[in-house]
Structure formats: structure tokens, C-alpha cells
Image (cartoon, rainbow, N blue to C red; front, side):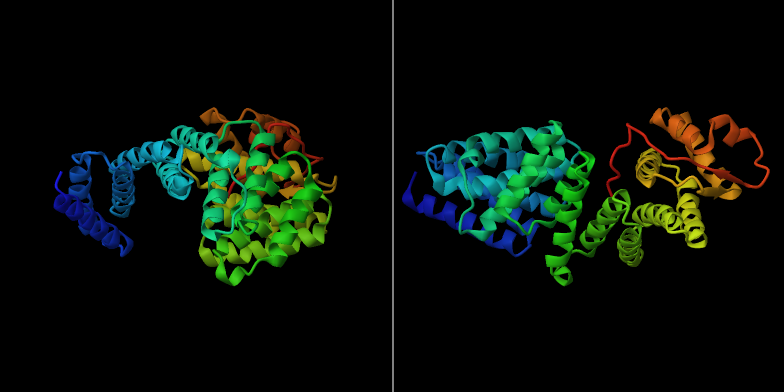
Amino acid sequence: MHLRNRIQNRAMLDEGISLAEQGQHKAAINHLLKAYDSLQKETPVDTSSIATAAYFLGTSYLGVNDADLAKDYLTKAFHAYIELSEHNPEYHSAFINCTLDLAQCCIDSGMPGLAFTHLKSLQANILSGLSRTEDGELNAAISDIYLLLADVSDENVPTREEYLSRSLQFNPDNISSSIKLAIICFSQNKTEKAADILRTLYSTTDWDSQDPVLQADCLYHLGRCELKLGAHAKAKESLARALDTYQQLDNVISISATQLGLGLTCYHLGHNKAGNHHLHDALSFFQHLDNADDVEKANDIILDWCDLANFPGSFRINGAQQTILARLLVRIINTGNQPSVTEVMSTLFNSANQVCTSPVSDHSVTAGALESDNVRLSRL
């Protein structure tokens, strides 16, 4: 191929990249498609330029919400970068960023298994031999790779914990990794460790520059730890702060989950009026859920908090709250989800039949300590 044509192809590629970086995605796609097609016809083949064109085509298609074409071109770039990175560390950064975008694209398209495959390929080819560098952006990208690995992995809990620990080695300021590491520690009954992670995160983070939902999530999960540790006053304070932020964001599921936790915490403190208020608000919302996924999420949240509450023997649920919770649990049973719901009903109210059919003479019922081995973590 003539030198002039090669120069023109790279000029077209550079213009497409410039447009993509400016957010002019449609114009970028027009230039990049021409460059990509022309580059493939060159001899000898310039794999680096082809990979670059494919990568920016993928991100540009993401910019116009075409996930299928985005995934196609990011996959082409991914395979090209595998070849380039094998003998040239210069391409490690491009390979990492490409994999991060491709994995997120797969997750958003409902293909977490494919995302995991790409992430594990990157780990095997590049990450296993890398340590933290002076390049802050590269460290942040690698940290996010390990965070995604933990998110989409179906491996055992210790392996997911290791992914999150690696994420924080590369970027100690990765808030999502800290919160998820605390959740995993909590699930393994390492409650003190989980609480320490969250307390440190909350006290050392400049929250003014962060997504407020992350601050609320940090406080929510800290409140869960504090309730389990018996620090009821601290749990109430943490959950109240989380609730305030969730209400400002109008995050309804999170508001209801936090209301439920606050209600149970208030009962432990003897603040029964406040407990009634929070519990009523939470259960009233859960009662009106129709979407099956939302109902299952509500089920997870209720089971999770019930497991944590370790109710005192004097805890009492009034008749109206009893009816709301019973109706919700019956609906969940009818969908075939979570057989442990029956156990929770029995623990709460002695038997499911009593809740559904029998009158309560004083419009209240006493609940004992709640425990369930099948409780899954509620994820906000």
C-alpha cells in the first residue's frame, strides 16, 4: 500500500478518536468505521492501529446506546490486545481499559458469565504479574477489574474476598470495594472486621466529592454491623443518617430497607413508638410490590434484618403490622421463592396458619429470637 494511503488512514483514525473523546459519537463512528475498514486492508497488517480503531468504535457505540455493536468491536479490540500484550508491556494499559469496558458492557447486557470469562483471561495474561505502579489511572482501572471480578464471580467467598483485597491494594480509595469487602466479612461472621472497614471508610473519605449513595450504603451496612454487635445506639445513629440520604435521593427500596432496620433497632432501645413508625412505613411499602424481582428483594431484606435483630422477648408487633407482613410473606410463598420464609413466619408468629387465619386477642404478638441459616445479604 502506498505511504500516502497509510498516512490518510491514520489521519482518519486520529480524527475519529478526537471526536470520540469530545463526545461526538455519531461523527466518530463515521470516521472510525472508514479507518477500521481501510486499516484491515493494509499490508503488512498494523494490529495496533486496528485494535485502537476497534476500541474507540466500541466506546462510541456505547455512547449511542448500541450495546450489541459496542460489544462486537470491544471484543475485536480485546483479542487484538491479547496478541499485542503477549510480548509488549506497552499495551498492558490499553488491554486493561478495553477489558474493563467490555466486561461492563457484557454485564449491562445481562451476560455476567461472559464478562467473567474476559476478566479471567485478562487476569491470566496480565494482572497476575502486575504490582501497584506510579500510574494512578492504571491503578484505578486494575482496582475496578478486581471489583468486577468479585461482582460477577460464582467462585467461593474467600476467592471473592481476595479479589476485593487486591482491588484495594491497587486503589485504597475504591469505596465500592471497601463496602463489598465489609459485606463479605460480615457474611463470614467477621463482624468486627467489617465494622472496622466501614468506620475507617466513613471517617477518612471526603464524601463531598463522592456519589452520595455510596455514603448512605456505607452507613447502612455499618448500622447492620453495629446492630449485630449489640451497639444499638450507634446502629440507630448510622441508620438514621443513611435514611436521610436515601430520602434525599428518593431511593425507595433503600429507604424501606433502612426503615425496617431502624424499627428493629428502636425496639432494642425501648423506643417503641419510633419503632412502630419505622416498621409500619417499611412494611407498607413492601406490601404493594408487584414485580417478582422486587418482591424477592424485599424478601431478602426482611429475612436479613430478622436474622440480625435477635429480638428481645418483649418485642411486640401490633395487629396491623402483623397483617401487612403476613400478606407479604404469603405472596412470596405463592411465588415459590425462598422456602425459608415459612420458617421466618413460624419464628415470628409461632405458625403461619395462626398469622393468616387466627385473630389476636390484644392485637399484638410476641416474637422470640430470630435466626435463619438461609438469609442472603441484602444488596442495595
